[in-house]
Every structure is written in structure tokens, then in C-alpha cells.
Image (cartoon, rainbow, N blue to C red; front, side, top):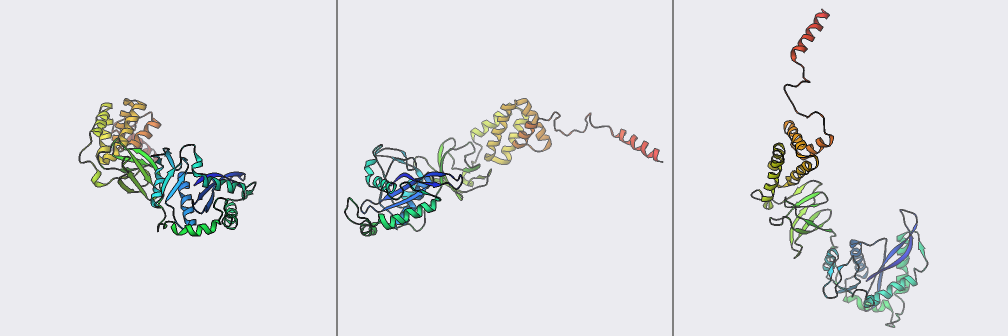
Length: 363
């Protein structure tokens, strides 16, 4: 299978004609081809095109020969290529083996190269379409009425007849389609969690500071060992700012690195240390990020200023990172503290005399 340049199609967003991409899968025996048009290529789009092609054929193949394009192959190597994880898992779901070609050697898959050129020179040459659906319908009609009924120049036999002989050899399609996911790498933070779209997911003890592979979709987040691919944890998706941690993964005692962060906070200032102690007591390991945020504020504004703000936060009963950040961004001239005696607060006797004078005049 391979990509080629597709026809010009009017873009529904810009109203201008735009070049599409032509995906072609060709069977090695019959030369039966599936040709699909897409606007752009991504790893998931590349894998979904394979699924669509398998469904059109009515079965799967055993081996796929492809170029070393990034959507399928991360590191080209004729003997041990590193496949894109999503593409690899899609092929495993359909029980298919991928065989990338040698680098800069496309003739190793000449059958699909010919099929790409055949479509470009015959039905699509010089044509423009008003929509992608219109272009795909035109290509499908040509495939059915002309490409499948022709006598192939190499085999000297009709493509449709040879495909009828080849079709029983295709593999059975799985009952369910592949469950797609997004993929990335994350470093485990001091709280034993990794971040995925502003939510945090816990791992087993012992992974702090190490990298893990992450797969996620709209429902699940899966954390994998980068060396073996072993599933470490699977969590339900959490809203932004939330944590998902298994109870067995919570540390029985305070980690040494957390104690070091608390020690830094007390060194920066007594009130800063008190705020961080409160965060750690009430939030546990999940509060380590906010404790580091408090230390970052001390570095940005200076320990003395932040310690004064932390004292105000303690007096007001809101010892949180969010309050400190907003307080320091606004930097009030007068500290927000509650006092029983203050120059701005007048004596009660003054109010009593004022009331007596006012009521006396009224009488």
C-alpha cells in the first residue's frame, strides 16, 4: 500500500481547490485495488484507511508491504524497523504483519506503485471535483466498471476473476473494529502521576522520575512500560485537574523527595513552610505540584514577599497555592489581615458620642 497525489477538490472551508491524497492498497495475486481519497494524513487516518480497505475487500491480508512514511514507521530498518505504536497495534488487531521496504527503494512494491500511477493517469487526470464524496464516488464507479473488469497487462487475465479466486484466502475480519487512541511519552512526577490533558493518573510505586508510554482516548488512559509494553495501569478519564490513583499505589510513608520539598519550603520562610505543610496534610501526594508552585512563587517574587502573602493566607484561612498566586498578582498595598486594633478602626467611644449628639439635637 502507498500514498499518491489525488485530484483537486474544492475545500469546504476555504472554497478553493486543494490537492487531496490518494491511498491505494493492491493485492499481490489478483491486482485488485482499493483506492480511497483523504484530505490529509495522520497516524490515525493512515490506520483507518487500512480498516476501510479491509472492509471493502471483505477480509484481511497476512502481510503488508509499505514505504517508510512516518505514519507507519518511526525508525526505518530493513531487518528491525520500529513501527508507529498505533499502526502496530491496528495491524496486530487484524493479525497482519508489516514489511517496510528498503529506504529509497520504492520499486520493492512495484504493484502498488503501478496502481497509484494507473489511477492518476486514467480516471483522475485533469479532473476537479466539488466535494470529496463526489470524487470518491467517481473513483469507486471507475474501479468497479473499468479497473476490475480490465485484462491486466502482466497476468493477462481479468482482475475481477482473479480476485474471486483470491478472496477465500483473505483472513476473517474481527468482530469489533480497533479502539483508537492517542499516544505519547510522559515522565512520572514526584507525586507518582503523569499528566494527560490537564488530569493526573497514578502509577505503581518505583516509577518516579522515569518515562512511560501513555495511550488515551475519550474513555480510558493506559500507562505502559516503555521497554516491554506491559500494561502498568488503566484509568478512566478524569476531568481537568483531577487525580486518579489506585489505593494500593499510595505511598505508606512520605517519600524522601517530598520531605526535601517541605524542607525547602521551611527554609524559604516560616509562613511558606506552614502553607506547604497544610497542603501536604490535606492533599497528600497530589499536593506536591502545588507545593512546588509555592516555591516557584518564592523564586519569582522573592521569599520575603511570598512569606508575607503566606501569612495573610493563614490569617484568612485560605492557605492554598491559588490564593497566593492571585494575591501576589494583585499585590495589595495593605496586607489582608484581620486585627482587633488598627489605626483605621476608630474607638467605640467616638461612635457613642456621635450618637448622643445626634439624638440630643433631635430632641
